[in-house]
Image 1 (tube, rainbow, N blue to C red):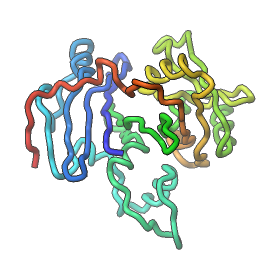
Image 2 (spheres, rainbow, N blue to C red):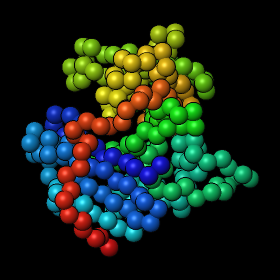
Image 3 (cartoon, helix red, strand yellow):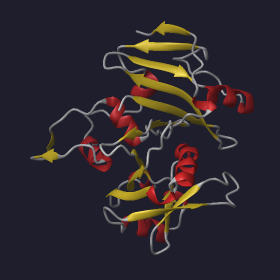
Image 4 (cartoon, rainbow, N blue to C red):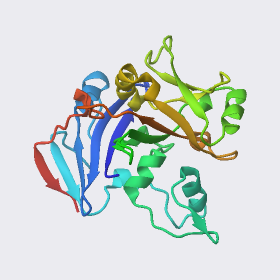
Length: 258
């Protein structure tokens, strides 16, 4: 895992835009804006971030850039072990975490959400050992559902299959994909950033797109971390995830950031 995208939500229209790309080559971090940032600027007057003031430059640093580092929970925090367990990233031995988890992996799994702004991060899907498209995500939107849906989400079991259902009359996004259990309970939404890829994958191989429950975190775990899912699909020949125009880089120059 070495590539993340940064998305921004306009607080007025509630529309989401992918705006930037972060990569790590093993030594340095690199950030550049993508075409979605210009779309956001044109439609809702999105402005460059303080750390990255120019849409058309790329930035590099040995240390993780502040807009991303500030989204990580410090290892020294008492709730850190619980947080890692919610993300299902590292086993515990004798009550203590035994391995250091790299920042990219933490951000990819958690989404890097903060209550104080309108940004979210998400990973580039990867091929698993079977050569399939694979990505992990938490069910979105549970806080907008009644307590019965939240209760059903808490009753899901590891390995339980969830079905994708298009929410055609959703006024905000008619392509939104709901997550439904076999007994017809809605337990959240698939992340919006996966939808374009999924429509392409489902169109070609509908029976080979699978969402299963990877981990269920009981209350009082925050709803945004309640239901962890794993999505797999057949990786088609000549298929590239997030290949749309909005994901294409804008950068023409490189800027060193200390």
